[in-house]
Picture 1 (spheres, rainbow, N blue to C red):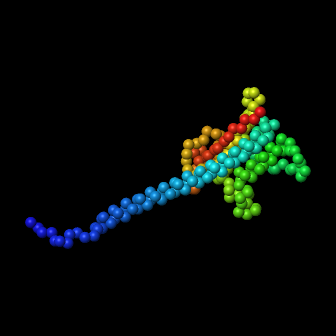
Picture 2: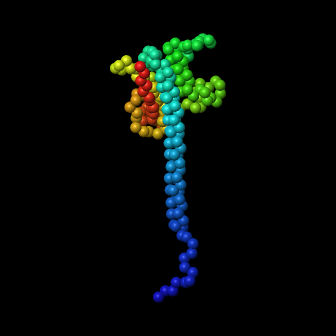
Picture 3: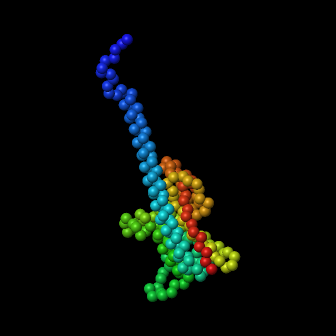
Length: 195
């Protein structure tokens, strides 16, 4: 019967050390992926909060100008110049007020209040590729529905929104071959009903 010395195996074998390193590396890679996902989700939530505030702002502007809402909030073009205002104008017409609302909303969508340089046309505070949409329709009983929507670029693919604002304008995240992908389009909208 063989006798084992009183000094048995001491330390770790090379295979044990390699398996430990492999398991640690897999755990760290999983932690890095979780961190990246958390950062992306936080950024998406921040973008959605910005857009929700922009949509609510324009919805309030429509509520404050209900007379002529059907004619004045039909469409939105961010390139439309701001209306000229008289310095002493105490009362603005509904059309001028709507033009001013659209002009100020376009500036907010572009984030021009937070710019790196005064000459920048896009601001630092703008959601990625934000574009506004207005759609107005008459309803029964003399009510007017104005749909205020904002579409922007998402970072990851999700279910494509059913609202048509920004359709065909947003691409996937492939830097080598970007292609239009509706799953990267995000939309928040509010319906405003006025009488």
